[in-house]
Length: 275
Picture (spheres, rainbow, N blue to C red):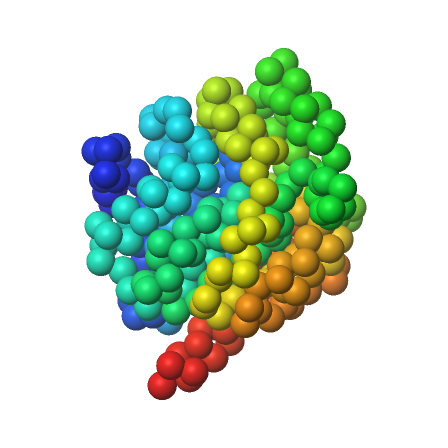
């Protein structure tokens, strides 16, 4: 079984399939590497795909405490060290996108490029950043988690999709089964990660991103608002953007064919630039 040890000696699970151009996929809040099923199915024949389970999540759920972006970024850097990864395309979704942003400076000499999926530099809105969620949404979610963690997460999962997006999908049952099969983190881990999301603002890091960056987002995302993705496009050097107009927060599930094509196209363009 593929595990790696971080600098503290903690063991983390990661998936590793395919060969060739390395792509590291970082999942979001209360998910696991399993959420990238359609990327492993569609891209592993032509690329090497690696996807860790973040601390407190999935098969790394036994690692308790320290669910903050500094530790997430260190854990990711330790994966790169353990596997001696270079010229990597780093793909982060939602909270995973913030981890990618946090990690970019430390890993820049090992990155060929970065893809930020359904991303925002700040989940919480402020006077000078109106493209986040209201602060009472995070506090309300915290109360729901404390009362009944699974019920709160079930409610969150429904917000991943635009109304009717999943119901009309040809693989609706399979996607539902995939999401339901992902083990929920324990309540303490859910709250730690939620608190990190609510208080973190990464806008100051955007101008320092020095690798080609692709922004992918659903045009009807209710969790990381589309305006936040447009903000990233405007404030990250060398960034480009593709919008999935009819998608919510998980275009890599509901529009996996187009999503995988975008990853392939961007990876090819990076290789051509380096040639």
